[in-house]
Image (cartoon, rainbow, N blue to C red):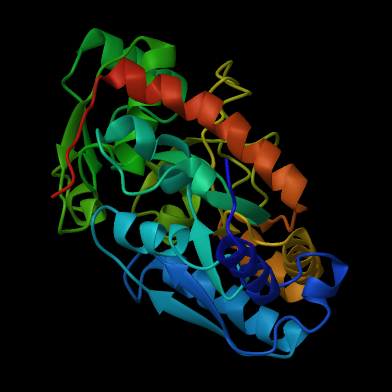
Length: 326
């Protein structure tokens, strides 16, 4: 193969234009505002949490860290935007279990792949819970299982839609306990409105979303995930206590960058996240509604994502759900 002088010069010019990705790559990073894309609407719980972390990172990094909401397409619009962004550390993603662990199994075509991202840091982990209307004749998850086996498919569970986190949590619980539920998708309205009104009977969700209603007595918690009882809910058993330890279905979110982002930049961001996770005000914020900050290193977060995919993909496959993006 003959290589022309023009090709050689072109290659040299391209090399000169490519930023050096060694240790110096992070020395002056960031030298302009950093954008964190949130693939959920403004005002959502994930949006509020992302802005909380962005404010903390702004103070530690010395540059503005701004949240950019890009909802739509079942979170694929914002997620794919980051996947296609330059790998320079200035466009990041708040990733969640659906976008990183099981969307690729739910949808026949996605505009991105899990490998399109570099892990930076897991920011939080949030416990999951089964909550029920006070009139349901079951006070623990074990009693719910007995009731569901006596009346297969009769107990209704509200969700935000087919294939959502709430739906798959319920599918997972049903698979390990041999029970069936009538999943009701509410899509554009809150399934909590239906549950509080007695239109549905149970809901599988993150504890943070229902903590206030549990504490006010409007809903009852049947069990929570985690190794020990939650300090704010000392009377609520864990699934592990009830012999359902394999139901390790907590939710979480973390920070990611486009694939190819230099490691020194990933490490600098992860160090800042770890420092934030140790702050008392951050610990208190999450403990108050069912979670805890993490602040892991990039390698640890990458390993964690792989382990979560190994949990969630069989759940989706057993459910038989296949969806199309509209």
